[in-house]
Length: 196
Image 1: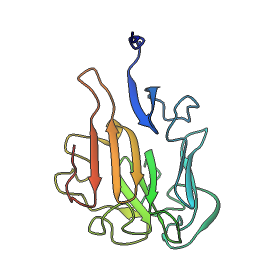
Image 2 (image 1 turned 60 degrees about the horizontal axis):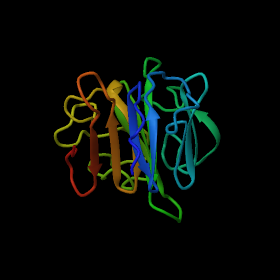
Image 3 (image 1 turned 120 degrees about the vertical axis):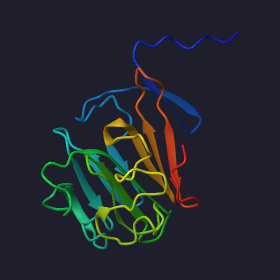
Image 4 (image 1 turned 180 degrees about the vertical axis):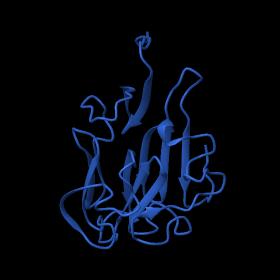
């Protein structure tokens, strides 16, 4: 006889990872939350981004400088002083790193801020080069059907619960609200449109 799932008092995100199911309570804090399984430390093959305790992010690793071509050997704040284009008013909501496995020049980082999506690092490893054709830190070109922020139509940066990157694919999950469930959107190199 199968046991029913326990009843939950708060909205959750259901994540299937390596055939295990995790129920992750949703939080609205911009601070580092030790109970949140994702977005505290995001790593690629040779690069990492970490959410700092006081808010904000730090980055280090291969091709993670603002030029996207030189390495950062110790944690560097992701801020307007180190990454031109960001302003002191920019709020970073989510970050992701993806790329190909092995070798050199593998990671491309993605950042979601109040202004929209940014990318830097090795071109073509997450986003198609028609969306971001330089290694340097900068805004992406909005995909077909997306807002000027590079997000799916009707989705604001504050609506994003999770952001994941992998080789040639960017995935975002919107928050569950009283108006309905969250949605999953996928941007892959086999399509120039946001699918969701």
